[in-house]
Length: 305
Image 1 (spheres, rainbow, N blue to C red):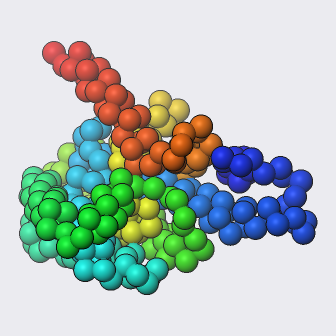
Image 2: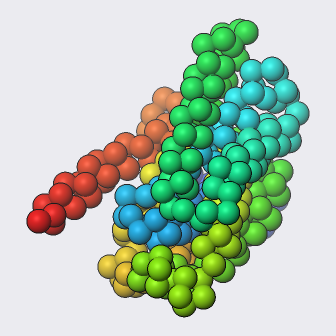
């Protein structure tokens, strides 16, 4: 994080920190909030991915699986479509409203069943509906400028983020991480199977609501602050699992730390890369995550009998 404060198209020497040099404003007003936001978003997505993989007992599970990221993206796209993003706080508000709506719909679909199958299928349906409505908004955008804004935002980036974005994201992500941390024991017991978990006192509905609330807040706040940045929740748990073991509870906190590290490093690289315009962080993570997912899938296929 300290290195990311000085890295960029213009490298700022650390000696100017705390001095009257005008370049110190670049660090305090542009790079510091961007670095903090990268760490927050990375931690939120990393821990969400670990929780989802532990809950679904599927190493290919991703936080975007159950519709919250798509719902948040749809909310932000609506604000851009109607021109409500002129105020800095309106786009995050719309995005968080979309995430909350997706969480509420998913909870209604599940009801009191606590079924993993209903949970997964409900998330896939919500993602599909939100994705199609987002595509509709892009195709019906009133002006080419609105279309460009929507497409650019959906790519995901931390460019031009300010302390206002950190102020919005920090409390929501902190609450989301706390909710996910509360699932640690239940996720460990769930590895024995649902019937065994029930017999050991795990309430499936309570666990499901904690997962929905925690992942919803983490992913919703992340999408509201930075757009869609994929694959962090898929990659990070696999990177830390060999070092901490395979218990879901042991993977949660290291995944948050590793997610923060991954996104801070990735954002520093795209910011300092010698390109004419800055590469979008969401595109960079997709270029990294796509091959990683393919290699993981091939490795799992070879392990099948």
